[in-house]
Length: 539
Image (cartoon, helix red, strand yellow):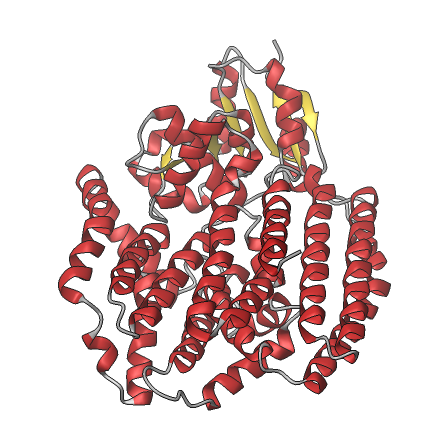
């Protein structure tokens, strides 16, 4: 079969594998529920301007992903796979873009290797199948950076594409996109003393295009909600970065293990590729490799010094790292590849032996039955990874480097997918799908439904209705200050409302259920899992 036919067949199989598992797992708290519920409410209310979470104004992020997911709900219905479609689609397009940009910058083989290493990197694979905003941000930043690099060869149209992508990145997660791109360009200019890229930015056409795409929503939502601008630009950007207001503080070294684990199975080679790219002198023109290295450094450094950290925040460096890795793998010697694959095998072996012990992490909330089943999936994933590493090592010994790389990539992709699918065994603890399914037939459309002392992000989505918060604000505190009638601030007021309601439901954790029952509140148990209890007022 010709090489082109092989590539098309492999792309078709990969496409099926990438998108085919989106509906296997239930949505879990918190991000997956939140970023499915906001689009659901847009569709239900018809208001696509002001984002709302649980019926409450929610201005933490711009609306692009909400719009995309709401459109998927409108076209294909409300399903777990449509909730995850946008991250999966942008992740898939990011892999294709790495292939394309790698071909243009470093050659055909480097582009292919960049794509397969990106697709099989553990963090990129996982976030591509998880409903959060970081994959969309990563794709548009990737498009902006790669468009900028392609424009340095004189093809100015790529610079306009970069401006458009940057605008979409801002509409995905805010001005952090401007900070990362601008910071990298500034640092590159300072270190290389090369100001020529500034003259190729196409400000005269690019800036109006950026504003045309990014500005209308910010203007419209500010006019409709005067409180938006201060909260979004000050609280959600400067205070998030400079303070611990979001309670996501982690030490400065937090992302070091995230990068090491997230880049598996390519970690050692990825770090080598950064050093090789920085040392390599470009024969002529713009130093694209050094710019990509600086992009990785700026993304990693910016989020490391931030007081708000989550594992997925460094995802935007992965496409650039994949390009450098593809370029390095295309030139790597047999000895270096064998050394890396030996490390992979030596890492996979203890994973295989330790995976069954994950079951020992069982608790009251995640009992042994769940953890034991998950451990078996992890054991299978480790076995696949080990087998792939051994097969790749055998290819490398026979001096078939590309076969070794593709074998390791395929095995790692399958192993990562198996580990991810195995997480479904924990869904009865981490998702309210099963609770919602059990009570939905009993739930009248207009009956009050309280969420006492907690808020599980997945419950409104699966019930397809909002809840009344009781003694709990969390990330909705700002919205509730604007609309204070949408919650119940105290347990005493809740008890009064519960007594006055002709019919009512409530969800709470097990401890609150036991306490309220001891205090004499009349409640009938309707459904229960390891974390939550749903009750109904006796009739």
